[in-house]
Each structure stands twice: as C-alpha cells, then as structure tokens.
Image 1 (spheres, one colour):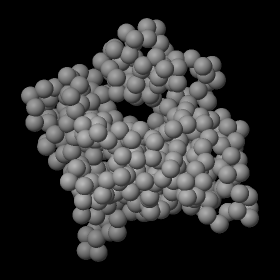
Image 2 (cartoon, rainbow, N blue to C red; image 1 turned 180 degrees about the horizontal axis):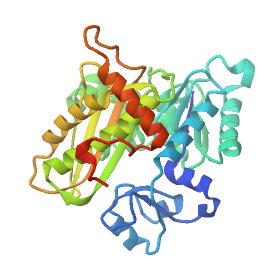
Image 3 (cartoon, rainbow, N blue to C red; image 1 turned 180 degrees about the vertical axis):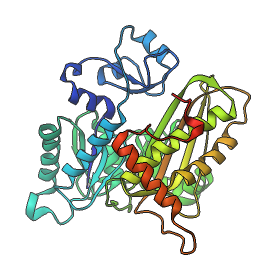
Amino acid sequence: MVHINITNFMAAVESGRDPGLRGRPFIIAAAAQARDVVQGVSDQAFLEGIRPGLPLNVALKRLPGCPVLPPDGDLYDTAQRAIYDLAARFSPTVELRSNGHIFIDLTGTGRIFGHSIDAAAAIKQEFQTALGLDPTTALAVNKVVSKVATRVVRPRGFASVPPGEEEPFMHPQPILLLPGIGPRLELKMNALGILLMGELGDLSDPQAIVAFGPQGPELRRHARGIDTDPVLRGPSAGGCITQSRILDTDSNDPEILLAHLALLCEQAGFLLRSRERSAGRLLLQVQYSDMKIAAGQLTPPAPVHLDRDLYRIAATLLERATRRRVRVRRLTLSLQHLQTGSTQLDLFAPPSDHTLQEAMDRLKTRFGKRSILRASALGVP
C-alpha cells in the first residue's frame, strides 16, 4: 500500500500554476485583511513559523511583506481530480482524502508495474513529471504504517517499511505522529509517561481502555503497526468536503450567521453533488473573535446531499455551538463520511426538491456559483 502526501497542498498547487512562487514564502488567506486567518502556507513560510489557522495580522508581523494569495477552491478541486486520475493508472483501488492525501492499493499489480517498491518510486516520479508536484511517498502493508512513514520523511522523502517490520518501525516514533493523536490526547499521554508509540503499544487492552476509553485498544493496535482498514475506492471515498467563510464584520446576529451558513451549505452541497456523493456526517466549527472555537457534529439517519437537508442540519449545529455572548468571526462546515451516489428518493414524496436542486446546479455550472442564491444570502458578500 502506498500513501502519498503532498505537503502544504494548496501552496504546492499555487506554485505549480505560478513557477515564480517556487522557493518563496507566501500565505494563502481568504482576503488580504488583518482580521483573516491563514489557510495555507508555502514551505518557506512554514519554516518561518507560519501555520494554518494563525491570524493573518500575527502572521504578517512575523513575516512582514509576505505575499498573501486568495484561495482558489476550483484550482484545488481540479488538482485533487488530477491526483486521483494519475493514481488510478497504477491501481483500480485508490482512496483520495482531502488536501493531497491519497492511498493506493498495489495488490495484484506486480505483473504490470513490477515489485511494489519500484511501483511506488514510479508513482512518485510520475507525480513530479506529470503534475509538477513532489509528494512524500511511503510504502507499507497498511494505511497507518504508511501514513506514519510519510510523516517521518516529510516534506518530500520516500520510505519503505518491509512486511513484518511494522512494529520495530513504529516502536521508536514520537506518539504525536500516530494518526488520531491530537495535542490534547498527546498531553494526556505525556502525563502518563507515554512519549513513544512503543510505550503505548506495550499496554494491555484493559490498561488502554482505563487510560483512553473505548478508543484505547485501537490506538494501541495502531501504535504496534496493526491496521485492517481497507482502501476505499472512489475519488472522494474516506475524504471530506470542507468550506469556510470569514464574516466581513464579526457578528452574533442570528440572521447574519444563518445567511453565511446558507452560502456554506450551497457551496459544499454543489461540490458534493458534482462528485456524485452524499454526506453521512456534518461537522460545524464556529470561531469567535477571541479565536476560541466551538464545534458540533451530527450524523443524519440517512446520508444527505440536498442543500435543504444540509442547511437544516447545519442550522441545528449552529444553534448548539453559538451559546457564548461573543461575536463570531468564522464558520467552517465539513461534510464527512462521503458515500457514492445519492440518497434513494421517497417512494411517496414528489421529487420536486430534487428537480429544483438539479436545475439550480445547472445554473451554477453555467453562470457561476453565485448566479442563484437564497434570498437571505443576497446581501452577503
């Protein structure tokens, strides 16, 4: 199994479009205004301490005069599709995640592309020559080990973990490199004296449950290099669609927040349907003007794909998340657990909503994404 990770994906794609950006520090943000937050950074800006999520005014103080580029969602979507199409030439089983992450199952391809390590090297070379992208590439027997390996050799290295060497490879790695370990869980593990993956793997399942709850045994298995999660076929399998909006003026007015949320749902829904997917879970993040974040998620009874259903669920999440008396600066909506195809129509309900949605999507495809909007969103830039 090969894992491809294009470090600083948005910046890498921007550099491919404009070679003059290569080797230079630059920032990607929604608008060149001090109140925005950083969405992407080049390698050089990363080395200067600039990170996604950092307030733009803070980033520009650290790196005065750094160019700020507006994000181009269409460009990044096109790049994602090109990445998938290239990987699909090497295997019929390809799983594309967000932001330039991809898994390629090479099982049964040996007669065509030779030994798996040669195929992995060829894939990396093809990314460089055909797409102008130099990815971190790792070969291993499963997803977790290959993903950890790319984190060890990033930003543009190549690694191969031979079969049977998973646990020896994982044992000395820092615990933060394990997928699913965020800063909060890392602090908890450090408080228990767990700094390396081997120390987590040495626990028993009962000990892992006591320390980390129901997820403990799975984390322990992953730390030992054990993972049975298969590669999911499809250009959006296992991935997510994320859209974000920064309010032009911080606000806690429910009508203004709902108007921005409606635009988010329409933007995310359009991308979802263009990929012929439905969402099995919605996650909404609310960032306040003091930079604190509230979040909530919901799993509907059945996957959804219509703007109407996305907005209904997202509005519920917004109501739950906005309990503070602080103005909101940013809304981020993620559609997760993507599934192939649309939800089956109700046998006894007229398909008017689906017909209307299809007509709206055709208008947006032909005349632009803002050619037709909800009335409540007309005044929202």
